[in-house]
Every structure is written in C-alpha cells, then in structure tokens.
Length: 132
Image (cartoon, rainbow, N blue to C red):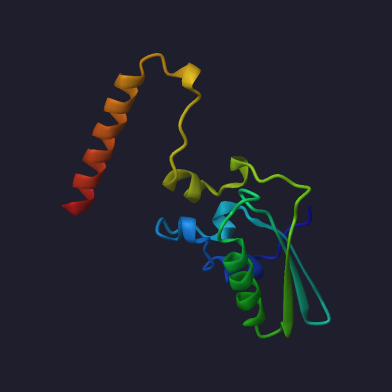
C-alpha cells in the first residue's frame, strides 16, 4: 500500500462513520482509508469497511466523495470499497484505540465478576473526573 499524502488524510479527518462520530473517531482514525490517488484532477479513494454489513457504508462513501470534491485541486472523486483486504484493529490510530474499549479474550479473564467490577469502577471515576 502506498503512503497516503497528508493533505488527503487531513481533509478526510473530519469525515465520520456514524457509529464512531460521537466518540470523535474519523474514518482516518479508524484506518478505513486504504489508498488515495489523483489523476487529472479526479480522485480515487479506496476504503475498507469494518464489516461487510455496515449499515452506514453508503453514507460514509458519499461523505468521503463529497469531502474530496471540496478540495481546490479536485474536480471529481470516486470511492470504492476494497473487499480483498480485511480491516483489523491494528489499523486504528493511537487516539482511536484510546477511545474504544476492546474486551480481552475471555480465557484471559479468570474472574469475570471482578473484571467487570474493576472496569465499571474505573469508568465511574473517569466520569466523575470529567464533571469536576
């Protein structure tokens, strides 16, 4: 995969999958932007989806296309979903990884009730700290 020019990543950093918008995680932070190429002022963006069943895929594709077409040196844009590359959590930015919670493998949690109690208490303290 070629390196995506920063100007395109910056432009797309305010495009959100509705599932992640309230957490402030853009399609760039999610690692959904696979490639961006431009030929004769026509941009072609390849996106990965977190799931082939994403109910918001059409909206994300439309928002990416519209945002690319707002760039001064782009007259038109097309967005294609890449199906032969699988999205995995290693594509998340550090920022997105910090905002999302991934549960450990159940085999790695010997005491489920204790794990939940510890994490619910931590969430409660974090929420209280944000309200002060």
